[in-house]
Length: 269
Image 1 (cartoon, helix red, strand yellow):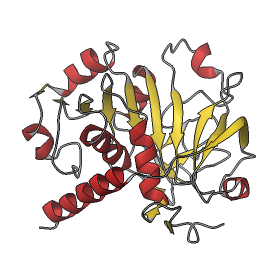
Image 2 (cartoon, one colour):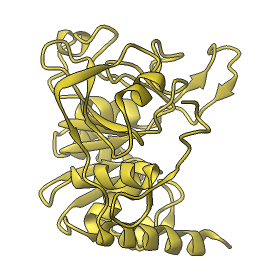
Image 3 (tube, rainbow, N blue to C red):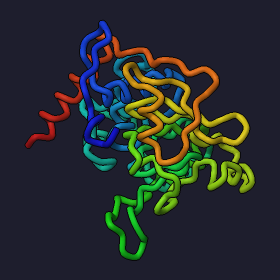
Image 4 (spheres, rainbow, N blue to C red):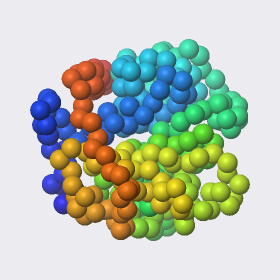
């Protein structure tokens, strides 16, 4: 399976047709609860978090890096500096206060991140593809992601599943997962849990209990083990019990699609 063949086919299992990318977002949203305080990344993390807020977790508190607390935007922001986040927030604080008090003070339960590359221990690259001095692609960079990855009580990651993104070795280590061999996070004295769930368009992964290597715990409908093996740049492990991800409900699909429609219309001009 290459990147093109699983780009986002429509799947029907007795429910309305949906794409794998839609299920990725929906599965991620289901992991968030009313009591969570979530530090939200732009893009897929923002879609998942706002879907959760608009469906099963209206009490979910969303925080963005620009200093917006308790924001509830009607459309998805284009960036952390999008004015809609401030307009829809309970209050805003300075970026130094956001990081020094809210983040480093341990008040945030979930850091929700995306990345260009991830390795088997949940370490992330958002800096460069290729060599740092002469990269093939220069990415947006770390921003607040390195601090989010270490200071939030736990981290969720959402990203497309392909060999170019699920790699044996990162081109650049931007944000700490569990370390190069799975033990460095603990050894360095970082006490937060790190990446506890990874949501892709093929499956859900969690770190193994002994060595923190990511393993598949749930396959999306229509996805086989061989599909995941082929799309992963390391010899992927599967948990002793691998579940099937429940397909999207009518409500989840309707709310997600309406959210994207509103966002596209709002940003079209």
